Image 1 (cartoon, rainbow, N blue to C red):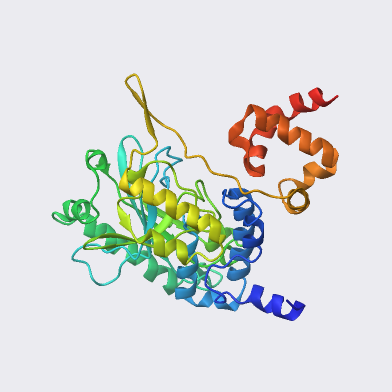
Image 2: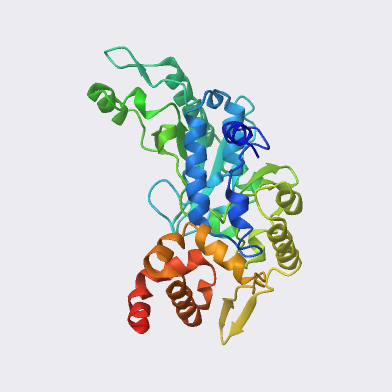
Length: 382
């Protein structure tokens, strides 16, 4: 590929498809069918997202929406907006253009259904343009763009407080019994404009701090970054007959619990359309999903009265020594270690840790353990 063609591809946010991450496929093919992990994905996603926000193409709200559908980890609220919950969202996905039964005027752009041990949080997200304004003038007057968007949050709040709408919400979104038993506490998120509109003005910053109501979270597009669980969550749409998978992130990793995936249809098609994911990785995930959808407890083992989950075994791809050496030179995780220890010591170090921690078979997982165990491994080499 010529330099001009490469630059035009990187600068075009619609080709070859919306949400494309240049460079990710080449890195992922080095570990396929195993997952590449989240480190490289987060890095490339952050760079691509910042480039989109800084471009004129970010004025196209449907384009921004489609990008976020492909990469839902950028959206806040998967684990609540009131603090970091340890519970996964339902249904392990963000919901695009969720309907509020009976309200046809304006639907939210996205919604997470987050939860903790006491409450269930529908997180309704309104996406405005990065180019819209919060304030104008020296007196920090509230811009009509912002006032209109915040008024939309008020309309959704009024809907939840009206009659039997909360029961209608629970029924429409098919919330499981354990979520129904918890208090339903909606939260409303507005993402609008850029920080530069208010960040340099003390008056605007003071006024901004007073704008949000108790159940609202107001933020600029600069706040969005890959959050917890970037490889676990997909994007779905709710219809009368259930959930349909719209897209999956290229770093998708499935957990070994089929109940989380049986709620939605369209997994095969969503994986086929994820062209940043290596083909062999897509086929592996489709095979595992078929197993889990037929038998959700395929990876359950009983130990006395306890039901434990055992992860499926990923058959590693067979690579030549030349390919492995190329991986160590190119991998963002291995490069600093290669520089510090040299090839022979790096291979020994990786082998030493993998023998003790088999879960660290990939370089990214290897890094997760290295903080604790690298000193011991280095002492063993001396």
